Image (tube, rainbow, N blue to C red):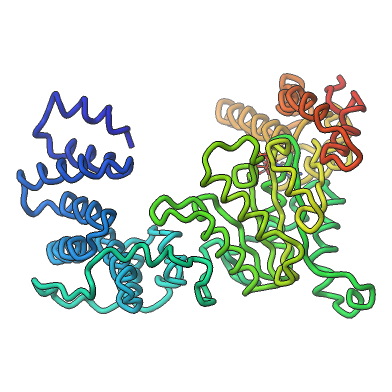
Length: 479
Ligand code: ATP
């Protein structure tokens, strides 16, 4: 959405343009300029008293200001005029929740989810202990009763503070975000370790920490080994970190929760620490469970570099949740991935948190052989000996290799269209494309040397990477 100042300028040219007014009002709402938003939506209603977007805009302003009764009256009016307005049902759900009327809150939440198949609201879902996916699975709610003009609301004051009084003392509940998958869930995806070339050490480490303990519990007991722990994976972009995190879902025989940043950062309820706590609570309540954080550097930043106290609190909370001394963390495996390991707070590397840091380097020759085989599958490729291509792609990331195959396929396809003949992807074509391409990881390696030098020490996270860097052939493409 354009920012509010651009829209305000546009409105000075065309002050009565209703669409512009609504856009500007929404932008003000997003930027929390509540007075301005109220004034703009009021102007829109002066033009059309039944304009439901404007009415809902005012309802949101009132809710944010703590006037839940005023918000409810307007949201009910919107539903009266437009029974399938999912946003109005969502707002009513929030209103009822803040009034302590959970059944009503769930009723309106379900209605919103059933009306709008794409709706998701992680913050509200967390509060309700119910996801939009759950709501859609239940039978559609009966049509709402016609609203009375007088909306019965209990209390009516601002109850939002009650939410925040003791957020960490919520009774246990069975909240699961959309990205929580139980074993056998058809939406869990079917990518497995077999789809990831190389990374053998990492794959085995994940098996050792979660798969084998579930397969051989007695053996683990006999050796006094526990399930779970923390693994940090780091390395240049495009080398398959995200891919392996997805493959873990297809591989491990237990619950899997992939944490999206949008589930943590929550301006509406303003309690990012609590959101993170609840994610961990969900994992604990559903152990054994793998908890996956891609781009973990945005949540686990080095506190010395952080200015805002809210962010610092979040990092402190994250450290606390990860603490190995918390016996409830047993049977949870936390995997974090980053391509900026230097940006992480060093406290994450203490025992009991991310004990293990594994460097995901650009694939070596055997890994490139596997990736090439995976990429060649199901493509019209002429039989060829992969040796030459493996050599020609030294230093390439998995993403670079994928690019080579995609580009070669495009060229072959274009030739097939122009000649009217099937044109296979040949070794010569792949080699020509590869030779014209430089490894995309070079820039990352350039930048990383400085960081690696500044973090000397026997336990440095960079030890694996330093070893890798000391072999020049690893970062230079040999031709
Ligand atoms: P970033 O740090 O930028 O998030 P990344 O390390 O997470 O990058 P991916 O997004 O997992 O990299 O990789 C991009 C794509 O490259 C993958 O979807 C896949 O097609 C291909 N790829 C990368 N590495 C591998 C691999 N080891 N095996 C198979 N395919 C790979």
